[in-house]
Length: 98
Image (cartoon, rainbow, N blue to C red; front, side, top):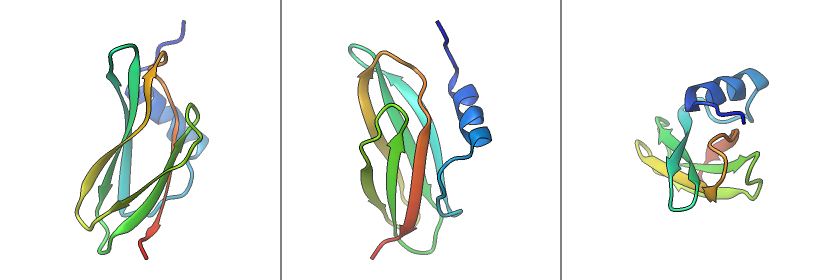
C-alpha cells in the first residue's frame, strides 16, 4: 500500500504542475483523521489586495468547490470527507471576486 506524507504529495503536485492560481493566494493540502477515514482539506491564504474567488478541485473529488476569500483572510476548504486515502492532489484557480 502506498502511503505518502503531505509533503510528498505536495511535492508531486508541484512537480506535475498545478492548475493556475493567483500568485497572491497560497494553498496547502492536508489530510485530517475523521471518523471513518481521512478528510481532505485545502488551506487557502489570501495575500492579495482584493477579495478573491477560488475554485478548488482534487483528483479524488473533481466536483468544484467555490469559495470567496476576503483580503487577508485564511480559509480551509474541505473537498472530501471519510476518504480511505491519505493522499490527494488539489487544483486551485483564483481570480478577483466580482
